[in-house]
Amino acid sequence: MKAWTLTAALILAAAPAWADRAGAERCAAGLQPLGQQLFTRALPGVLGGASIPDALRNAAVSMVMSGAVSRDAARQAAESAGPCLAMARPTGG
Image (cartoon, rainbow, N blue to C red; front, side):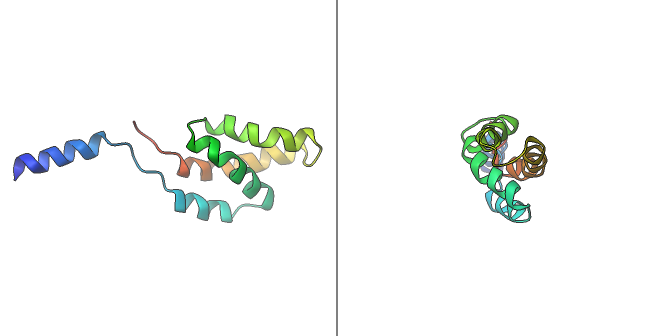
Protein backbone atom coordinates (compact mmCIF):
# COMPACT_ATOMS: atom_id res chain seq x y z
CA MET A 1 0.00 0.00 0.00
CA LYS A 2 2.78 2.41 0.87
CA ALA A 3 4.65 1.73 -2.37
CA TRP A 4 1.49 2.42 -4.41
CA THR A 5 0.87 5.67 -2.55
CA LEU A 6 4.45 6.79 -3.08
CA THR A 7 4.27 5.94 -6.79
CA ALA A 8 1.01 7.85 -7.21
CA ALA A 9 2.44 10.86 -5.38
CA LEU A 10 5.52 10.90 -7.61
CA ILE A 11 3.44 10.68 -10.77
CA LEU A 12 1.18 13.51 -9.65
CA ALA A 13 4.15 15.67 -8.64
CA ALA A 14 5.76 15.22 -12.06
CA ALA A 15 2.58 16.00 -14.02
CA PRO A 16 2.07 19.57 -15.19
CA ALA A 17 -0.52 21.59 -13.35
CA TRP A 18 -3.86 21.69 -15.12
CA ALA A 19 -5.02 24.96 -16.56
CA ASP A 20 -8.21 26.50 -15.23
CA ARG A 21 -9.94 27.08 -18.55
CA ALA A 22 -13.37 27.53 -16.96
CA GLY A 23 -11.95 30.04 -14.48
CA ALA A 24 -10.25 31.89 -17.32
CA GLU A 25 -13.52 32.09 -19.22
CA ARG A 26 -15.31 33.42 -16.12
CA CYS A 27 -12.53 35.97 -15.66
CA ALA A 28 -12.81 37.09 -19.29
CA ALA A 29 -16.58 37.44 -18.99
CA GLY A 30 -15.98 40.24 -16.48
CA LEU A 31 -13.78 42.23 -18.86
CA GLN A 32 -14.78 45.19 -20.98
CA PRO A 33 -15.74 44.20 -24.56
CA LEU A 34 -12.29 44.97 -26.02
CA GLY A 35 -10.62 42.93 -23.28
CA GLN A 36 -12.95 40.03 -24.04
CA GLN A 37 -12.12 40.29 -27.73
CA LEU A 38 -8.38 40.29 -27.08
CA PHE A 39 -8.75 37.34 -24.70
CA THR A 40 -10.62 35.37 -27.36
CA ARG A 41 -8.07 36.22 -30.05
CA ALA A 42 -5.03 35.53 -27.84
CA LEU A 43 -6.24 32.31 -26.18
CA PRO A 44 -5.29 29.91 -29.00
CA GLY A 45 -1.76 31.28 -29.01
CA VAL A 46 -1.40 30.96 -25.25
CA LEU A 47 -2.74 27.40 -25.31
CA GLY A 48 -0.29 26.68 -28.12
CA GLY A 49 2.65 27.75 -25.98
CA ALA A 50 3.11 31.41 -26.88
CA SER A 51 3.93 33.84 -24.11
CA ILE A 52 1.00 35.92 -22.94
CA PRO A 53 2.55 39.24 -24.03
CA ASP A 54 3.33 37.84 -27.48
CA ALA A 55 -0.16 36.38 -27.90
CA LEU A 56 -1.79 39.64 -26.83
CA ARG A 57 0.47 41.68 -29.08
CA ASN A 58 -0.37 39.47 -32.05
CA ALA A 59 -4.07 39.71 -31.24
CA ALA A 60 -4.03 43.50 -30.94
CA VAL A 61 -1.72 44.59 -33.73
CA SER A 62 -4.17 44.18 -36.61
CA MET A 63 -6.89 45.98 -34.67
CA VAL A 64 -4.57 48.91 -33.95
CA MET A 65 -3.11 49.02 -37.46
CA SER A 66 -6.58 49.06 -39.04
CA GLY A 67 -7.60 51.95 -36.80
CA ALA A 68 -10.34 49.91 -35.10
CA VAL A 69 -8.88 50.73 -31.67
CA SER A 70 -6.26 53.09 -30.36
CA ARG A 71 -2.93 51.85 -29.11
CA ASP A 72 -3.75 53.05 -25.59
CA ALA A 73 -7.11 51.28 -25.58
CA ALA A 74 -5.47 48.07 -26.81
CA ARG A 75 -2.79 48.32 -24.13
CA GLN A 76 -5.35 48.80 -21.35
CA ALA A 77 -7.48 45.92 -22.63
CA ALA A 78 -4.42 43.68 -22.92
CA GLU A 79 -3.40 44.49 -19.36
CA SER A 80 -6.84 43.45 -18.14
CA ALA A 81 -6.95 40.29 -20.28
CA GLY A 82 -3.47 39.09 -19.26
CA PRO A 83 -4.41 37.67 -15.85
CA CYS A 84 -7.35 35.79 -17.39
CA LEU A 85 -5.06 34.26 -20.01
CA ALA A 86 -2.61 33.28 -17.27
CA MET A 87 -5.36 31.19 -15.70
CA ALA A 88 -5.84 29.28 -18.96
CA ARG A 89 -2.15 28.53 -19.52
CA PRO A 90 -0.93 25.14 -18.36
CA THR A 91 2.05 25.37 -16.04
CA GLY A 92 4.80 22.98 -15.13
CA GLY A 93 6.23 20.46 -17.47
